[in-house]
Image (cartoon, rainbow, N blue to C red; front, side, top):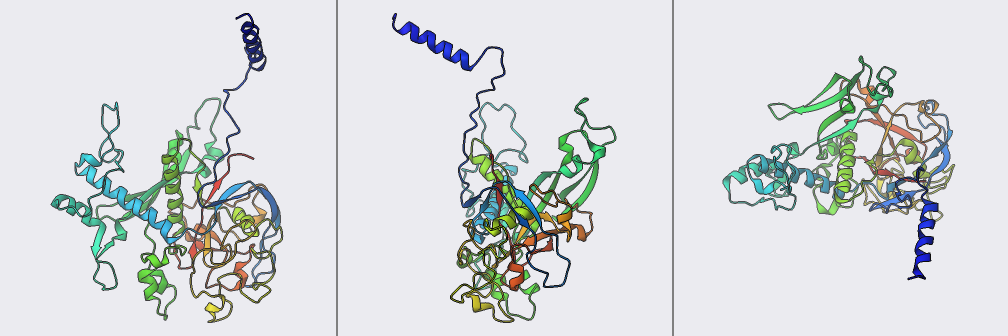
Length: 455
């Protein structure tokens, strides 16, 4: 015991030296925790590059000025979101609405039972029991009537007998209007702990009318708390399949229209016919899916900014014209390096006619596939031909949160990378064009990014 006592005393002295009484020592939270790589994503280390077009415009338009910028580290999907991955979103929305409908109808076995909860939530807000199997083939007439709303009978011999009714797949997502919080008139007063008495926030809201049609509105409300900054939107999340014949008339694209998203043969093809708003909804759902399955929440999944996308496409090469680093679209053997439109009518010269399976060509130096060609990709940035003169040189992004009531010109979002129907010019890392956020095309897809917690 006499030998142990000095050791105990020394231990207390050691602890006292490291945790002095009456001093700020922190809570002891370990800051060395390293995040695991999100599934299917590639880590892009931080760095700087020359952002902007490397070549003059093929259309004779005025290019943005090239600027040297720095981008923080982030994760990015190694390929575009495929039909198969987007189907997981579609099925989740279908199942969540089905479970909610069963709970509202009084089927309590589909409501999550929460221990020690005295007052149960209303059917509209109750947590759902995802472990309960949805009785799609139930003999119960009431259940059959509830679930039949999600399908319509196919009358085409090539179609399955029961198909999802796209009009029923409605998803609501929310976001905080930081642009409204940043207005000088809405500056939060840290001394009083309140917003100015005259502060107002202009936000979007959506609702479903008595005919089941989604309506959108822009409202102005008094700004009293952070909750008043939240907008919400209801979107039908099923991809637009008609765009194959709408955008390319006088051509026989009917088979693509019918089967591209639904047929398993296209599972590993990039999802198309998805609007910017639908892509935003997918990112929000993916964040929710991750956070519900993990104890510690991660950064939100989101669309990349224009700068993040371009930095990732260059693969660490500051002045790369194309993602593969060269100045030409063919390799040394004369083979094309991406899926695009080499010459008028010669779509298959690069081995693809329209879209191809993701990762059909070699990745760039960041191990990212299809950063040029196949499908163009949505970014989170608003389109402005002179945005480089407005943005910061640290994590630049020209953002404009267009409201429902804003004119269409304010709803333009940057798309990058070029597609199967574009000429080589649009495949360049620094070239950008735009599409309206509520429009869908058979040549535009997307991939997600997630910010990194650390240096």
